[in-house]
Amino acid sequence: AELRAAAAPEPPRPAAASHPEPLRKVGAGLQMDFGSLGVVRVNLRPEWSPTSFEYATGVAAARSNTSTVYRLEPGFLIQGSLLARGVKPNSKNPRGAKVMERGEIGWAGGSKGPDYFIYMGTGPAGWLGVPHDGTVWAEV
Image: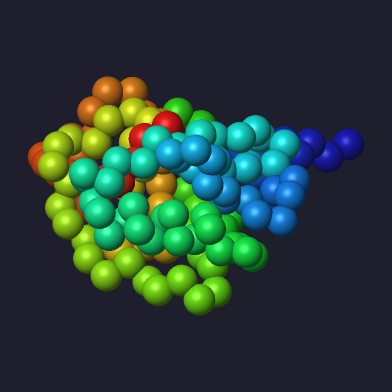
């Protein structure tokens, strides 16, 4: 008999959104639908980045946004993109005003978007820069 090592289990992958608009404007914030993984309510912080606020609300208001979640690392981050045809790209990327903390949302890789991440680590993310090198624009 031949012995084979068991493959490491893959992390869960987000399922498709349960409605056509995975990102929706709800009250003063946004709602991100991660399919079978659940729904996240986003508290926008326009005082942290007015242009990011405008971009995110523009995407959420679009009739057919194609926002997605494509990366999930439990205890570290949730990553995705905010996209909608006809929505003008974010124009500025102001440096964060503070150290990013658990539950805050910023643009991935120091970009202006459309790729974002929700930081799920424990404690402040000082390794991202003090203050944060990228733009932090919302919290969950």
